[in-house]
Length: 291
Image (tube, rainbow, N blue to C red):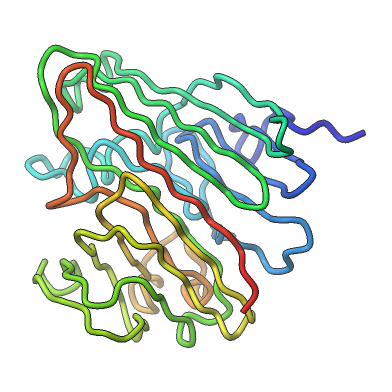
């Protein structure tokens, strides 16, 4: 009988939890609390996109899956020497539990607490817990507590890479009539129209004040991918397109065609402020739906 969870060494010798549940398989690397695979039984094409050129090495972010971004999004606001997207995605998280649940899902929980090295980058005391529930859906919950004596503000994102058959034919519903920051166009503030979002070139948009679910319609693979969320007020949509992708060592030359990032986030205007002792939970749930 196959064990529901196996802790072993994955690519690059990095520790991971391999999940083989009755409804889906998944893979979670302890570095970065990084989900690199979630595949419902009989799903066909991969749901999560992971680059064939992804680097699996200590302290390096993995290109694909669901990178966990905390405590800032993008470049640091005042010090560009600090790591892009914060430090959580390149840190070794502690495995708290990995076990089957009575409802047939498998739960992996990881933890990260502040220490001297995190405080050198971000001078705040915190406790982060990340719970990944593997079943018919992929449910992810990031729980952040302020364990210090002063308030702090933070940004966070579950930077989900989704597989599509062809980015040029895919579209995203759920962001209609929504304001956004266009990071490709010098951080200009704009508003998306009433139609579903289609991508025609490099795209990096932070949609603000978003609460609704997003749906990626993929006529090439004849399926839909739903992204539901709670505790999140931003949605980020990203694809590097051909020119920028060619400059990225950890992305293959044509892989940009087969991916779209639809990220559950709290970024920019939607950063979260926590009082001492307060906590905030952000969740994202990915589901595969027939077209």
